[in-house]
Amino acid sequence: MVSVTMKELLEAGVHFGHQVRRWNPKMKEYIFGERNGIYIIDLQKTQRMFREAIAFVTNLIAEDKGKTVLFVGTKRQAQDAIREEAEKCGQYFVNQRWLGGLLTNFQTVQKSIKRLKDLESMQTDGRYEKMTKKERIKLDRERESLNKNLSGIKAMNRLPDAVFIIDVKKEEIAVAEANRLGIPIVAVVDTNCSPEGIDYVIPGNDDALRAVRLFASRIADAIVEGNQIATEGGVVAAEPSEDTGEGTTDEGAAGGAIASELTSENQNGSVSDGQAQSAAVTAPEAETATESAPDESTESVVAAS
Image (tube, rainbow, N blue to C red; front, top):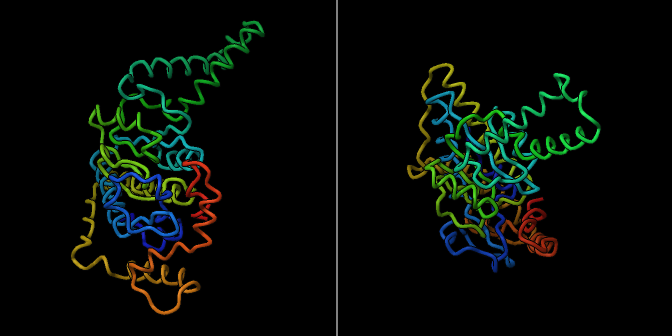
């Protein structure tokens, strides 16, 4: 079963939220505390909810191998990770710009995809050679524009069965369209976003490169595992409950140990696991994150590094 440890979450900087003044009150239940003007996300809730999202994706694909998941992440930090992980698991992706109506007006989008395929076939069947140079340049520009926005969904001939989104604030149109069509949404939600309309919320840093890649890679691994289960005809193992005491096993202990190590240089004496998580953001790190983050899109990138 694909899973994620507290150590991986800490090392990726998933617990770093946005500045206090940019928070969304609807994310209050997922916030552990505040330190040096930056909100700290409760990693225990993140780990539990991330595992639930992974289990959902695995079950979805295991039920029917033909089911698909659309990866969406158009912000600069997420573009490469979204493309690579989607290609790894053989799914579709949108990493440049979300075209309005991509889901709700899919028939029209299919016409653009058909046009792109037609332009590509013109290069191979000799029709290009019969055109003038000016006509070829015009068609090349059209093809490049279409390919930039549609390359990740070129083979998608029907609506996806689920959508995985990085940064629901930036991809609010994608969220609205998926909600309108009843398509389940798995999304990474930062402290400046609203969790409303998200079926499987993953509270976490959606700006740091390592955090984005961790989220995308685990979802991709869940899809790969679901395909294997569907091929072998096996049964998906049930995710152990966090309330039965299993949440405080070796993974929880490892997470607390990592958090304690991160704060041992800056604090004297022993601290509890919860305090260690909050104190994991040291003053120099928080100052660096604040100074190096003039806008919302890059607030947490430096902090996670």
